[in-house]
Amino acid sequence: MAKKQSGSSRPAKQIRASAEAIWSKPLTRRQKSDLDRIAERQRSADAGKIDYSDIPALTDRQLAQMKRPRKKLVAVRLDADVFEWLQRFGGGYSTRINHVLREVMLHQR
Image 1 (cartoon, rainbow, N blue to C red):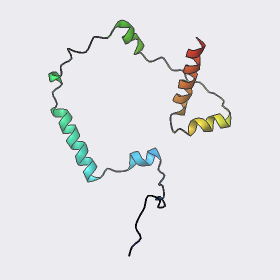
Image 2 (cartoon, rainbow, N blue to C red):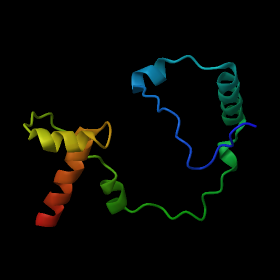
Image 3 (cartoon, one colour):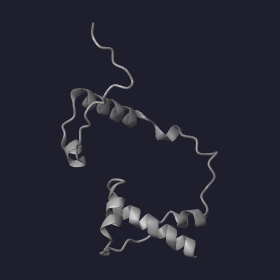
Image 4 (tube, rainbow, N blue to C red):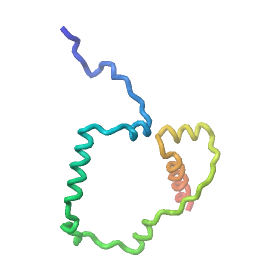
């Protein structure tokens, strides 16, 4: 009689992979066919049939808020523990630094 798996069974070993390894991995036949099907559906869609009449026009203020602020390249020296904490959340830590600093800036106004 085989041992029955339960919810408390030991979890499988996690596999680590870098983003580069994931992006450079070739697609399977099924993935290619799924992408081809989606692309065909998008090509055949007629955007002219969409009714935009119930969507209000954007104000000048709203349009002005959509502009992204210019970025400036700077070098910053951070304490090692602060940098490691930022990296724990994954890639994009420089964007995260910017968000944290922006929140502090907005609360100071």
